[in-house]
Length: 101
Image 1 (cartoon, rainbow, N blue to C red):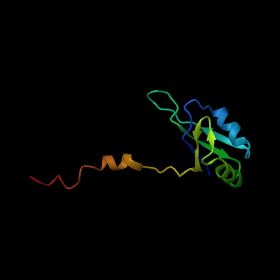
Image 2 (cartoon, rainbow, N blue to C red; image 1 turned 90 degrees about the horizontal axis):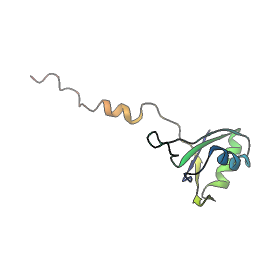
Image 3 (cartoon, helix red, strand yellow; image 1 turned 30 degrees about the vertical axis):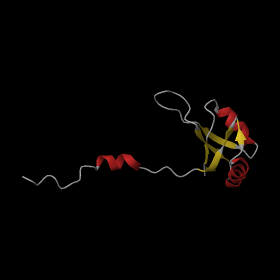
Image 4 (tube, rainbow, N blue to C red; image 1 turned 120 degrees about the vertical axis):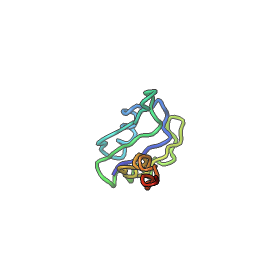
C-alpha cells in the first residue's frame, strides 16, 4: 500500500515528509512529483511505510492535520491504472469511416 498526501506546501522536501511519517513507522519510500515544465513541486506526494498497520496509523493521525500552514489530505493511494486517458484519445476516430466511397 502507498499513502497519498495532498495539499502540501510547495516548499516541502522529501526529508520533511520523511520526518513527519517516521513518527508512525519505518518509511520505505517518499515521492514528490514535480511539474515537467516548471520543475516545481506539484503539491502532493506519496509515502510508503513498512506495514499496512503503520500506514493506517499515519492516515488516521495526519488526515486533515495542519502542517506548514496547510490542512493535509492523507489517504490510501489509488492504484495507478495502465492505459488511462491516453488510450481513449487514440481511439477517437469513430471507426467505420473507411468504407464510405
